Amino acid sequence: MANFKTHLGTAALTSSLAATALLSAGHVVPITALWLMLLGTIGGLLPDIDSDNSTSMATLFRLFGGLITFSVVGHIYQMVSMLELIIYGTFCYFTIRYNFKATLEKLTVHRGCCHSVAFIMLAGLFVVWLLHLLGYQEVTAWLSGLFIFSGGAVHLLLDEIYSVDLANRRLKMSFGSALKIFSPRNPFLSALQCLLIAALYVHSPPLEKTWQTLSHWSDFRFKPDWLNRKDVVGFFDSLLASTRDSIHHGQ
Image (tube, rainbow, N blue to C red; front, side):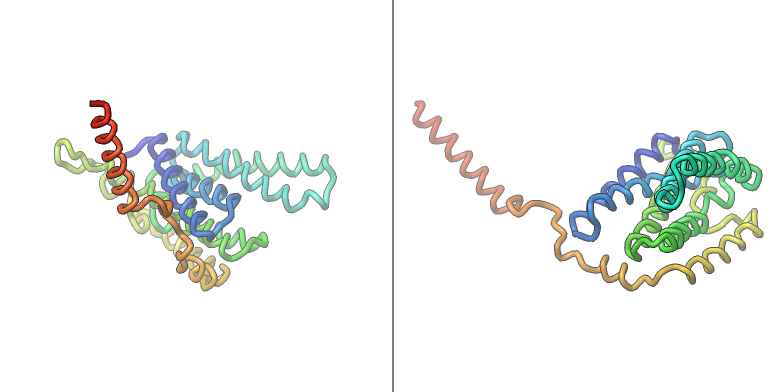
């Protein structure tokens, strides 16, 4: 399977390109684009959250702890004193960083339920539901969930690609264990995932506004107006002509 650096770099690259495209089309503002890049990168590490003592898991829980603590602090800072804010923030971070991590390690096995399409879909919908609950706009909530899901999908695809030995033209033992809809070895947890997916989707905001936003790309420009075949050919023709004239006059 792909290593930590490959997952991190690929997720960061793909999420950055996708967020830049949305920014160029006018669908998001710069701060939202940065937020989506971060979520896409986190999504790229998410399936390895069930790998005990892995670099991905440690990094994920640091990021989760920081993000959730920041969100909590951002919503209560006007209601409590500074000392209370420090206490609540510290408690929130260490609870997620250590207690929740330890609980997850006991409940999961590597490449089990967390290494599936159902899990990253569940994670994406949870982010949609949570951001909507915190008062974020529908489009921002759905895009955030989409980037979490897309980053996770990139992770699963990378692991499947690395399961194919192109040099010896054979499939490794790990082939098929990465990109799966759900884990057939864990029917109870897989069924629970499906139930949670349905519940979160029902309680998520409507999709219509997000779909309308993503359906309009009239303002998107992949390249500048001056970069077209006619102008480029004309530029090189004029450059060659001036070079020939210079050589002719030099002689």
